[in-house]
Length: 147
Length: 144
Image (tube, rainbow over all chains, first blue to last red; front, side):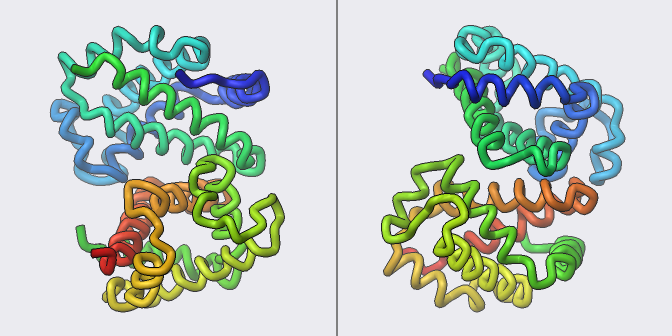
């Protein structure tokens, strides 16, 4: 189980407090679909995904991105029990959505990169380290109920 | 998964912008890799890896030079990186992907995203990610 120090928690919370969940969510999901196009397989009914600008401007991508990142907010609130917080979502991703858990790592890394573009100077190696720990913990928690 | 004309144009454009400072960013990427993914330090017991280390900076410059060589030879990455592949496989024996090299590449993307947010569009991210994957494949070509 991943353990966060007080400093890591404070770093994560401080960054999260400044994130525009709606915007960042759309950006994260959009970039995932652009950079790793095979992930589009999960979003057949999203309409036009034919180019980077189509993807980034697609309203369904933005809406779903917001959903995903809002759910990520649960991770930030439950850093001491990620597995518990994501148990139901883990079952959903396995049983209903059939998503290969490797994809969670891809999304996690995309999120870190987005934070880097938004926070620039503030995104020091220490801040990155805390966030990599969190996204990795979430990826593990989401994979936990797979069978 | 060959590099398209767009990929090449984007990567070359960014490299032109980085100019002589590629080493600054690869050094930061290395520092991030060692801090964020401590297992990668196991390949450098002979170096001083503390923040600001001159040895890390020197190594960062080596990585920068290799990447610049790659950018100049996008049509034949395996050929251009053949000697480096031998080195990494035979002498250094660094793990193949998905381990250490990919961690450094991720940290390089984070570094560039942080310093050049205006240039780091989704399309640029995709092309850079692809280019770095090709570099890793070329490095892996002599492993076995």
